[in-house]
Image 1 (spheres, each protein chain N blue to C red):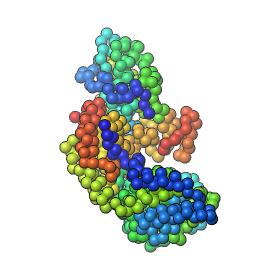
Image 2: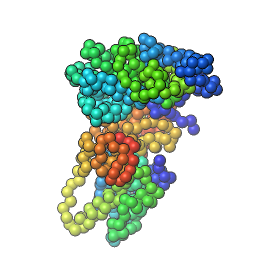
Image 3: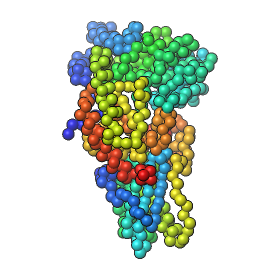
Image 4: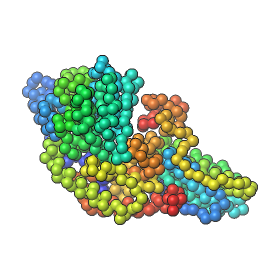
Length: 170
Length: 389
C-alpha cells in the first residue's frame, strides 16, 4: 500500500520530539479526522536551524511529518514558506489517494509554525492553543468523499468533484 | 520467523481436513446436482450431505431450511432484502441496532430509498441491546427485526433468545446476523427462536466464498437471485459444490471440536487480558466481560492510532486488525465504537485481536512484548501523549 520511502520514514522517523522554547509552533488536525501534527521550529538568521515534530496518526501521517522536517531543515523562512503538501507527497514517492486528505498536513503545520514565529517576532499576542474534538467540516450524518471531502449522496459510488470511485463507506 | 496470526476474523486458515476434502472434490469432477442422470444424482447426494452437516451445526429442524450462498454478505442481503420485499404488503418498518455490520446497514439504507423506514436502537456502554427497547420500537407496520448475534468489532454477544421471544409473540420475522458466531459458539436456531440466520463458512475454518442462510420453514422471503429452482427455489444458480462440500466438513468438525476450541481460545483470551496491564497502561477493553466471543479481544490504546500499531506489529510478523478511521478508508471512526461511548481519539487506537485454533500461549507473550515496544515508540511521537504528561 505504501511506497518504500513512506515505510522508511514511518519506521525510522527523523526529527521526532519537542523543542523547548521553540521560536515557532504549529499544530493541525484533530482526533475526529484521525491525525494531529505539531511542528516546532528553531530559527537563526531567518533560517530553520532545527525542526521537530510530534504526530498522532497513521503510517502516512508519521511519514509525512518526518519527510517535511527533512525538507525544511536549513531552509530560509522564505524558502520554507513555499513548501506545500504536494511537495511532501512527491518526496515520499506518492501517497495512497485516500490518505491525501487527512494525513498530508505536514506543510500546513509548518506554515502555521512559521506564522507563529513571525507573529511572535512582530510582538503580536498569541492566544493559548486549545485542542478540541471538532472538525472544520463537521461530518455528522452527512457523507463526504474520502478523497476530496466534497459532500456526496449517501449511496453514491462516484465523486463528481474529484472524479474518484468511492469504494468505501463514506 | 513464524508469523503470529492474531487476525483470524479477517481470514481463518483452512483446516488440513478441509483442504484435503476440497482437493478431492475438485478431482471428483462432480456434475450438476440438478441433473437427472447418475453423475447429477451423485452430486446431489454430496450436496445434501453437506446441508445436513450444516443444519446440525445450528440445530435446524430439517436440512431444507439451509440455503447455501456465496458467504455472509449475500446471506445478510438475502435475509434483509428478501424479507422486506416478501412482506411489503404487511408494512415497511424494520427494527435494527446501531452496531450492525455494514452488510445489514447498507442493505437497510438501500431499502430506505425504496420507501421502507428503519428504527435503529442504541446499545448500552457494554455494547448490548436491551430487548425492551426492541419491544418498544416495534409498531403495527414492523415486518422485520434484524439484530446481530455477536459484534465483529467488540465480540459482544446480544440477548438473541430474549429478543426472539418478543418477535415470536408479535409474529414478526427475526433475522440474526450470526456470521461471526456460527461455528465459534453454540447456536441453536430453535432455542433462539429466530426465523432467519446468516453465517459464513470461513468463520469455522471452511473456505471463503461460501456461506449459508437459515430460513425457518414457512418464513416468507424472496430470493435475491432469480433463475433456476436450486436451493429449494430460494437461491438460483448452479451450486458452488466444492465450497459447499468443504463447508460441510468444516461444520462437522466445528460441531465435534467446539468445546475444545472454546476452551483453547478462551484460555488465550484470558491470558491476554490478565497479562496486558504488565505491558501497557491506559487502554480500554471494549469486549463485554461476560457475553462475548471466546476468540476476540477489542482494546483501545490511548494516545496512538491503530493503523500505525498494525504496521509496526506487521513489521515484527504479528498480524492484528484495527478499527481506526484511517485504516478503513472511511475517514470516520467506527460506528460501533462510538456507539459504546468511546471518544474519537480513543476509537482511533483500537485493535481487534482474534485467536484461532493454531495460536499458542507463546504467541500471546510475543505479541505483548512487541506491543509494549510499539506503544512506547508511538507514544513518544504522539502530541496527545506529550500534552497529557
